[in-house]
Image (cartoon, rainbow, N blue to C red; front, side, top):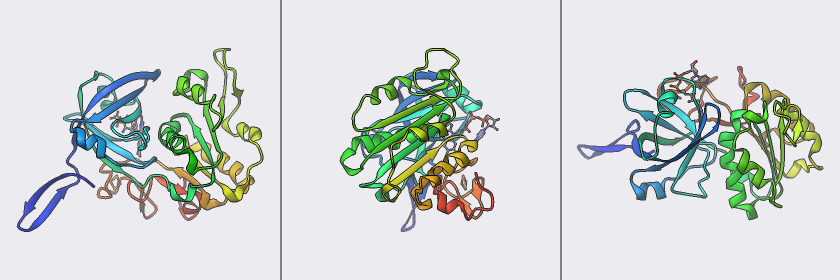
Length: 289
Ligand SMILES: Cc1cc2nc3c(=O)[nH]c(=O)nc-3n(C[C@H](O)[C@H](O)[C@H](O)COP(=O)(O)OP(=O)(O)OC[C@H]3O[C@@H](n4cnc5c(N)ncnc54)[C@H](O)[C@@H]3O)c2cc1C
Ligand code: FES
C-alpha cells in the first residue's frame, strides 16, 4: 500500500489514508446518469508504475465532499490511465459529474484482492456481467484479450435491462467482430425496437453457448444481487467446479483498508479479503449475496 511516509525515530510510518492527486483526462456519458472517466496520476512516473489487478478498486475523493470506492474498469495491461464507470447517486457522484477534463480528483489504492488470474491461465473463461457489474468485468475482459495467448476460449455474456441501459455499447459491439472471443448480449426488454441481439434475462444466454468442458473452464460473475443465484445455478449445471466460479461481492465501505469494519461479511472484510470470492468461499458465509 502506498501513502505519505514520515520518519518516527528510526521507524518509517506510512499513512494509508493519504490520497494522491490525479487529473481527469477524458469523460463522457455512457448512458443516462452513468459516466465514463479516464484519470491519470498527476505524477507521470507514478501513473506508469501504478500496478493493480482486474477486480480491484480505488477510493476516490473530492476534498470537503466525500470519498467512495469505485471499481477499476481499465486493464493493467494498458498502463498510464485508470478508467471508471460511475453512476450518479449522491453527494460525491453528483460533484464528480460537474467536473471537466483536467480537473483534479484524489485517489488511494488499489484495494481489494482482485480476480485470481493464475488459476485461469490456459483455461476457457466465461465472463457473465449484469447491468453495472460489467464495469469491473470490463477490466478482466480486456486483460484476457490483451494476453490472449495465455487463455483458451473466451465467452462474454452481458445483459442489461434495456438497450438504453446497455453500457459500452460501441466498444462491445466492436469486439463482437473479433474471432478470438464469443460475445452474447441480451436485454430483458427491447424498448427501442432496434435491438438485434437476444431478448430475455441473462440466463437465457447459456442456451446459446457451445459445449463447455467444465474441467478446463473458469467463470467470473458480477451483477445485481438477484442475478447471482440464477447464474450460479446455470454454471453448476454445466458442472463448473465451485472453486472455479469467481464473483465480486460489494458491501458498503468506508476506509477500504480493513480498519473501520463497515464492510464485514461474516468474519471477513470485503475490502481486503474481497471483493472477489469464489462460490466455494461463499458457501461458508451465513449471510450470502
Ligand atoms: C468495491 C466497490 C466498488 C464500487 N464500484 C463502483 C463503480 O464502479 N461505479 C459506481 O458507480 N459505483 C461503485 N460503487 C458504489 C459507490 O461507491 C457508491 O455508489 C458511492 O458511495 C456513491 O457515493 P455518493 O456520495 O455519490 O452517494 P451517497 O450520497 O453516499 O449515497 C447515495 C445513495 O446511494 C446509496 N448507496 C451508497 N453507497 C452504496 C452502496 N455501496 N451500495 C448500495 N447503495 C449505496 C445510499 O444509501 C444513498 O441512497 C462501488 C462500491 C464498492 C463497495
Ligand atoms: S471498508 Fe473499512 S474495514 Fe472494510
